[in-house]
Amino acid sequence: MAVKKEKQDREPSLSPSAMRRLREKEQRYETLLRAAEYLFVHKGYHETSVENIADRAEVSVGTVYFYFKNKEELLLKLFSEGVHTLRVILGKAFMKAEKPEDGFRAAGIAFFDVFCKKHPGKVAIVFKEAVGQSQLLEEARRVVLQKLTDDVYNALLAVSESLGIVYTNPRTAKVVAVGILGIYERVAYQYLMWSDEHDKKELGTIGRDAVDFIMGGLGEFKA
Image (cartoon, rainbow, N blue to C red):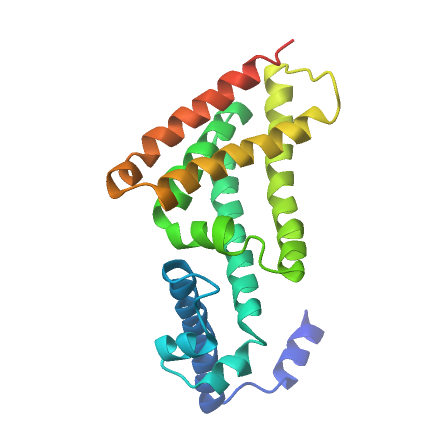
């Protein structure tokens, strides 16, 4: 411990001016992300230019390129951020419950009541704007969404063990996990992207019905 402390004491600390510049850099980075997110959601990825992002963030175009290589990198960062937020929300909801099946239900409800309602912009980025844009983005989507699928798959295995669910094929649980994510995605897309404000307000109730439908379907696999 003493050696570690001596090493820390020898390390130079940042001056107040350097700390201020670091904070300003971080704030500018965040401002650019939020400007791009707003424009991608309300105007569309293809209809948004780097100049538009710079104008909304109140910086020069050169500043945008200082922080991000191109518009695609901004979208990729926002996509990864959105999926990370979703994984954290679902994970917290699942872990709070005493039984896996209760956690699975709570996570499904959290998808609609927390992620969709509190982060509609991230819903649009993850399930709409980042889809089919380029080979680079599609590969990134595949990798990131695989982590989300694995989360659902592992939670499903815990539910299966708790409820005595038996699958005739070892790959079935993975297929079911993909299907569950597909249902949630389509319900969110339908009621956030295509519906009017009245229907959007009904998303929570509709989401619960979707979760109940899924939980009822899992019951059919019981031994």
